[in-house]
Length: 266
Image: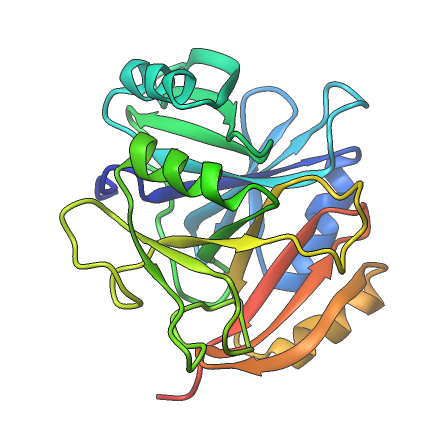
């Protein structure tokens, strides 16, 4: 497993009330197979490669949600930067056996994310292929504070959407307030972007919290949306075309929200 660049998304997992039901849903939707992890936790594999994990919620007050983890080579320093720049540390660094060290935090707008300092487990073994992670973006109402936070904590270099609307694999309209994140040391733009920031507008309910949206690559966006409905989930945003292919926003049958992206035919 290759090491991940500093601050790159390197892992995702979902917290679910019913782990076995989650296996059935995602197994059919993405073709994932599963192997038992430590405790109520299951690794998800696509073609034998690690792509995600499913976890049984240990506390009913926890949200049923997908979470993303960003790579760090010094988790203690990353946690200190989070506190210094207005974030909140939810879980201080804790060792996950030989696999690595993890922590959880929230940005100044309240969106929750994880940190991962790799040990034997680096992260995804496959990305940008059907059934695997391809993108993440944070939705916030406090864009100015949040933009500064991610640039200071993770060293992201940012680029705004241009007038044509290109640059965001989650935006179909031009002029949308969206910022792409590229790792430090790269030229910011669509070719280097690893994630982004969108804005929760007044069109959404005031009680909607800030959150990260996780995207998975699929071979057929429309078919995936239909499968989600058949499996008891919901289609939050029906399939639509964007500069990077065709996407939809979906919910599993337990309420966890995620997105799928069908890349354009090359």
